[in-house]
Image (cartoon, rainbow over all chains, first blue to last red):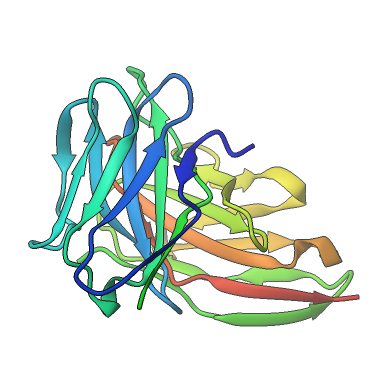
Length: 116
Length: 114
């Protein structure tokens, strides 16, 4: 059990559709991070959220991509009007709510998004 | 821009061989460094981390890494690998002290032959 729960594990969409990826952080964690892994590439940071706040979205594409982490429920990464280039593995990570700053991130199993 | 480089994309070793995977980073200031492993079909797991203090870091499963500030390196080592070490290994870094996103290397695919 990874602790960080992502669903779905696999998602297939046609070009132009919307993709919603969900992430529930580990219990007690209030920091959530989203990463994208393109084929043959390392993970690329996309966005960092705390409850109801986007802290750093410097890695998010300017259009079609959005993320939220509501007070209740999982974090959602939303991709509108998907294109073939969005095909990738999307990983979520979480770290604890703590005054200590140096906390490692714990990863989920990822969502493999395929665009037809 | 901050970056992390892993020199070897694919490494094939025999069981009991010694392992060293290279990792270099480009951060100028205080840096936190990590090695993650991803076994086939599984999530990324933290092998070890460096925040400060002793530059030789011990991790799980017999792995260790050495932070050499002058070389901007954080190489992963294991004296004797096992078949079960077959996996993808990722080096990652972030600026020290913050709860920031990690910068990852492209990964090294390690195959251990029995």
